[in-house]
Image (tube, rainbow, N blue to C red; front, side, top):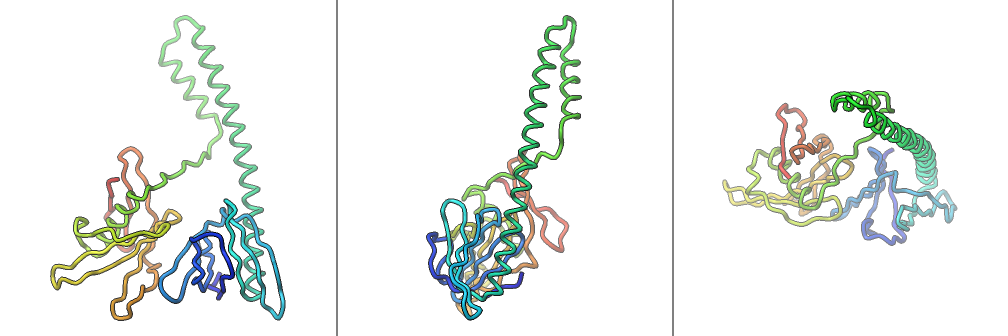
Length: 262
């Protein structure tokens, strides 16, 4: 969906400032952007409960997007934009209902499998001469026969984790040692960092967006005294290694893996 012009009428969440001037759906997120200053707020489609049309006249629509936790935002935009957003939200809600039903069925299958595991353990325990090896093999066999497709949820990064990942990302992009990069504030999933370049003692400021399991960046433009565009060409996914408690990623057009110790 292309970016559409909007006007925020009201909202009960500070995550969407009234200065937001545009809305775009990308990578499963509703992204609010501002043309003046620096504003970027992301909401997963899954966090949207529905949409209500309040008024429609002269091809201009006023509508409210409802999020989870009783959050909402009321918007004025074109009727065409409302139709597109409404259709997208309706399709997403239907898809979520289908996924919920599938997950419920999987949970029931896992519960039944767990009951089967317990029965096997009790059965093997009561048989004299059964070795620990046979018990393990019996349990392993049932696990192979049990339903697959369980989704392993990624680690939810803490605020400090996000700072470390942002520093590692910016350091790798601009070939700078992480120890000269300092934290400079945050807003939702946005982390601001900066460093002083020793060559000319100039300060360079950046912001990282770590929402949706990916990371991207934008830079402060000194000449224009405003934030530049999001460098979508450098947006990459990051992954969590539970065994080593690290986050790792590979920059576009490079082969070496960057590892950040949390």
